[in-house]
Figure 1: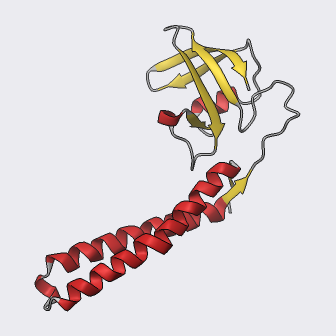
Figure 2 (figure 1 turned 45 degrees about the vertical axis):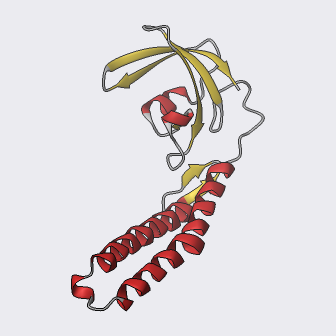
Figure 3 (figure 1 turned 90 degrees about the vertical axis):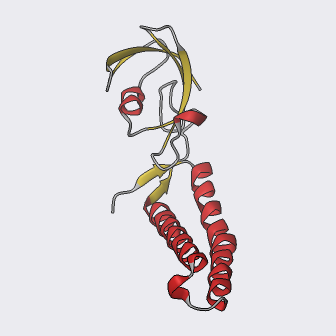
Length: 155
């Protein structure tokens, strides 16, 4: 089985979401199905159909989270990185064409979210950054072509 890297925080978030679905969402939808059944003929009962659809969605999310947790390997950030970018590093960089400055934390694919400032180590940018140091330039192939970045800070 392929092991997928994840931070301890990311792993805990997945576990918390799984527990929430099992303890809150699943019982709530089961009650909704029981109530809909109590209304009589389920063949023409829109409430019953909606509750069954929601149940299928919740069970799908639970199965997805179980798969993700089962394939995850928690990686702790090494303090002996010698200033190099490693899994868990936060990188501040400048786009050399636009002058735009951005900071991203390198995390596993299950927890990556550009909106929150995290990118996957398996993404093209993540792969290009691993092992680099402050002051180095990185070229990354993107859908919009090759982009050049300068690494300003590694934390």
